[in-house]
Image 1 (cartoon, one colour):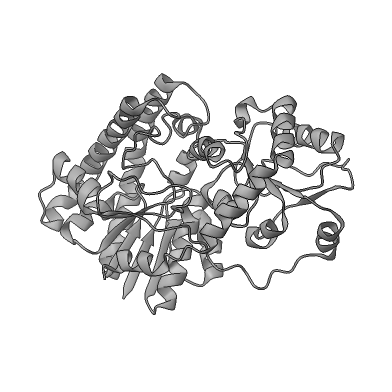
Image 2: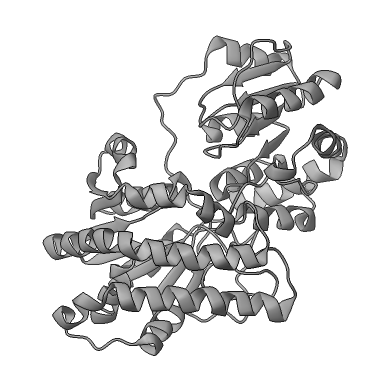
Length: 420
């Protein structure tokens, strides 16, 4: 069967689709990955057919106003204003990417389409072709409301009533955008579409999978049957990767090593942030591996022997060997760290990272971190010492990690996608 996987967004949006691509490929399905052109190399390494979507949408997501919407800064009113601006601006860009989505689906005539909510054409194509589409989110608190937390980008816990209102507010603009942006295809598809039809389809009819662990975020009891928590899925680790002797020697030499990374997140002054982190590590002689990744942290010249800088490393290899982890709170990084029993603290930057930062203290696997915009030596020092000295965090992380490693939702995931 031909399967098209459609995703617009950052690396964190792409990774779950690559994991699903592996599973579908192993079952004998023909997979096409349609992502922003920036991810062509990543897909080519996985040897799947690639279809490049416009780079403009990813550039929009990295803009300042979008960062307000995604939770990096700004009050509620600023976020609402930025959300309205973003949705209006994205409508112009959507014309190009919707055309690409339409043309690809028309050309390939897939049996199944898996897509994220930034991809709008599959939402109406699915109304015409029931049973062939699945909506995917690697993040909680997106479409389906929960009283325990506000909608993504709208803050933390605002109370049950306001929390639920934030979902209705953001969904209103989402459904309106779908309706207006796809209007030119309604007649071609032979369907009559209005706001109510789209709302019912997305919330009550479309199969939706959240690729998150139920050990971290169980499915709320009031969510409908078409919504599924299918566990965290990651693609196979590159077997060609080998650690350097320097890295192996460093790990064998030190105990209770701390792993630090900001992943693909950047900040206005990465060198300053790195030096502030190093000052705390040096003061308390904390052994640490710092992954500079995409530039949120940088290698500095003066570095103590108990700190090692790396620019890239497979998390599935390094995290099982670490005592604790401090990171930005991306869903993939968080799941992997806890899966391997790392006590964890988050320095949230945007989006769901603030949600996970609220959740960790409730799970008692680490202290609540301070957001990157409020980061300071004092706050970091307080958090890292608590993280390393409170043994309960490690014990609880190991317990949750054991649960996650025993989760096996692959059959369930494929059953939902393949409508079996």
